[in-house]
Length: 278
Image (cartoon, rainbow, N blue to C red):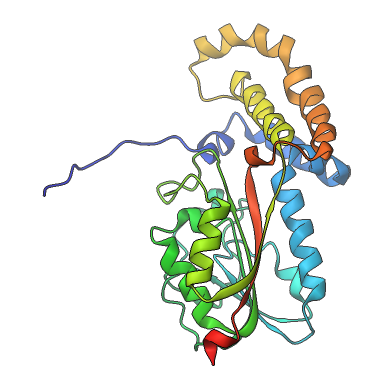
């Protein structure tokens, strides 16, 4: 059956965020978050709490363990595994501005397809894979490959969104993954003791959406200059609420722990089955 030749240029979040109009605001935001790190818990929620989760898990890993960061990109978590033998892997197809930090790839020891990682079976103690499998055309094969390279009893640390804006195009294949997906396909890949934790509830999700509304109403958006001019008074009136008060309030309300079915994603931990490997 013939297939269509699709040439649509999908707009992704980093298209806007890497634009010339947004750069001054981005630099100001990053400087502010570095100066007042507690703001990251509100205004860079997913990134902040993912790093805290990985940092906590890294402290549990014995010194000298072999750790592979699958889809490592710019290697933002390498520093957390200084006590381990850290190996960075990626396929290496993205542009610099599409990666965390916008400074390109880190020092990659392995460059390959995620479904064919060139290491021996059962040779690694920990597989770390964060915000990657939504960019993999065959994610079921990918988690099976992670199971292959882990030793019996080895640990998988996996995170992915449940939903997100388009990003890292044209390699954004899936909107996200549910607990049912992890339970079924991790078990089939030989994992046990599967723990799935939502990263937030409905309030934090709403707070993040509020920040995007503030951005897309702003003069930094990708709209035409006439649309931006028309929206400017609305943005000026609404930005204190959309860009600050609403996210702060939502972050506080999220501690109530309700509405987890609206989470932005999950953090998953699992162990490679010992009995299956015997």
